[in-house]
Length: 202
Image 1 (cartoon, rainbow, N blue to C red):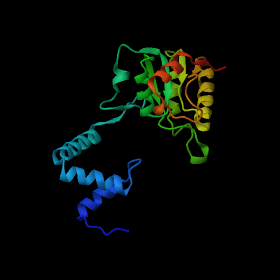
Image 2: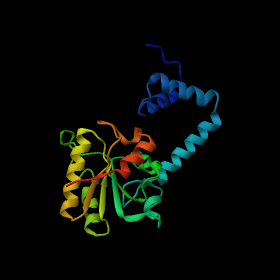
Image 3: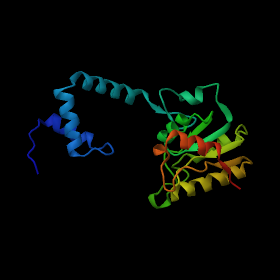
Image 4: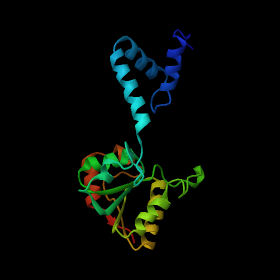
């Protein structure tokens, strides 16, 4: 174990950076040293941008995507098709679907997936809000773009039952998404194909 040679404030910054996914002690050290020895202006910009984003960004009250106001950019757009609603697990998944260029409807972001063992049920995913949207009778197709994991498939099955109760057609994104795969890691062409070949869930 190496001795700590950094001042307390830098040590605290090193520890703070470790909460980021994929950032360990060595990665955090490289980032901090780069900011302070080579890019102090970049570090100031990062600090300012992070502070402003934390103060302004929240979740969209309608779909759950990140937004800098009451509604996100997609929910504010008049060019989207309100009859199609695509359900994804995370904001990253939403961005992946958008990058495919194959979808022009609206979204609902779960911020997770059903996992009873982890204490994540319908309430934790905001499915009551989704149910209210389905009851408005504007949505005619619910596109289920949850991951191809066991929990993702269970979540899709639960959502399909919700759609069925509301008299709405439920479809599941199709081929090209690997079993056990996360949408945010799938390329745009594969996602575009999966959206176009989605299948109806009976």
